[in-house]
Image (cartoon, rainbow, N blue to C red; front, side, top):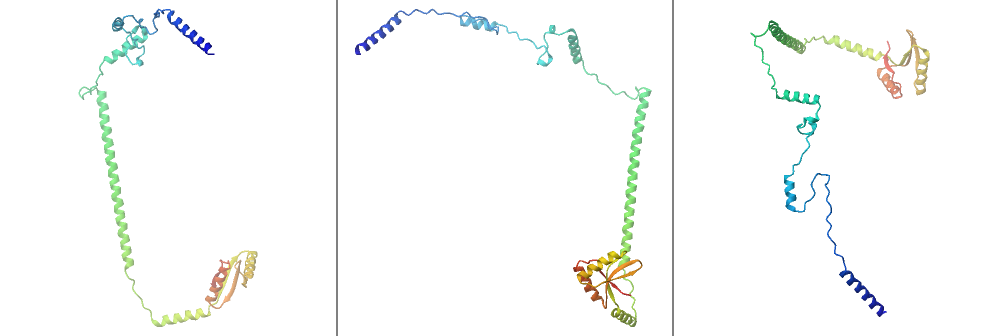
Length: 263
């Protein structure tokens, strides 16, 4: 095994020595430079010569063919005849100075111009007079409104003063007052009352109301007169009894019942 390893090492070393001493010398190959698509000349061998050619080289920039390209149109051979005429006309118009129109004095105006001027002046005067008349009318209307308001205020003030004045007090004899009071008390003591819970043209409605009152515990009757059917409760000897009955009826849901004095 050791002998085999030594033989391999010797063979490998001999191969390296043979390759290193019998290697061919490589000749430098200069590539053939061709002109690129950008128009630059091939790279010269000398450095300063290449720089000098670049400095002396004239670069041509194509001029724009449209006005919107951002520059002036330098080559007119690319334009048609109509475009060239239009361009020349535009340039001539741009070189011309704008004409200023001066006002024509009155003495130099024609009769038609003078008539137009007079008409304009008359129209302006008429408009001014109309505005003045409108302003005067508005002022008159305002003054009339103020006068009317003042008159109304004066009338209201006079009416208030008349109301504030005390009316004359008339004293009646004491005896007639006492006698009238006694009569009213006597009449009130003898006055009789009843409670009416509806007045109907038809008897069916009156009977239904009477049945509802009977269901609630109120005794009622139907009286007819003048073509009307009235549902009444009573009579009562005084107003307080009638009022208490009305309160109980309202609490039971019969809100149409009212007290009435009997003749």
